[in-house]
Length: 273
Image (cartoon, rainbow, N blue to C red):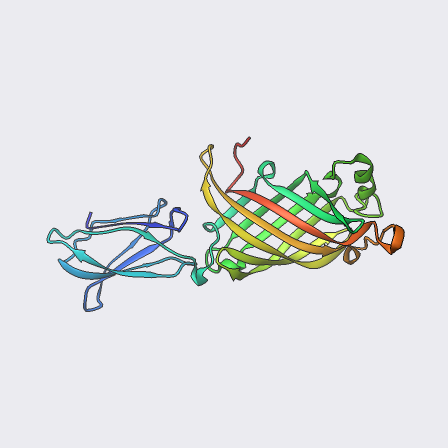
């Protein structure tokens, strides 16, 4: 092969839609080749010996340019090239990712008596993530949570939380979240903008998102990990129940801290323990 190159993200995953363009020192294009599904470029077009400019581009990534020396045999080894996300912030490779509920968690924390916290989690939920290729800020998240799956470790408390005083699961069995866009908050950090529907009330809710990285799983798939969190006010969702104890202290705090630990699989969910 006259030209060979491997195009990767900083996590080491293939950028399959990358394009390599080679120009001679006069600026004339002498070769253009696309990466395969493995992010590898192989092209047999003979090149004239001497210095050439190699430009690697991919939608959603910052371009990279370098100088390559073509040998007398007409070969140029570009080697492994790492592309960074446009704007410097990273997300997983573009496409649809399915959240694995077995290895993910949806939790909430509320203040109790003003001195400690009560933690709960939802055990039944589904979600998907679509990472946009052209503009990563247009990536989308959709999630559905079964409100009745709330679990705080206390059966009496859980039944009360399912009642009309709080989640009202009989009339509103699902909690949904749909994002409307992302904005960069730093390298590997984003703010997800979206709408949360709970108890028949829809409110704008932002989530702070951290991308933790991507890696292979034992079942032949690719997984990405995220951590996200945000704050809700109970009264925004018509949950006004409270009990006042001594000195005017409310038994339950007015705000809830949402804590999400997410593991998503590229494509459809397969395998897992």
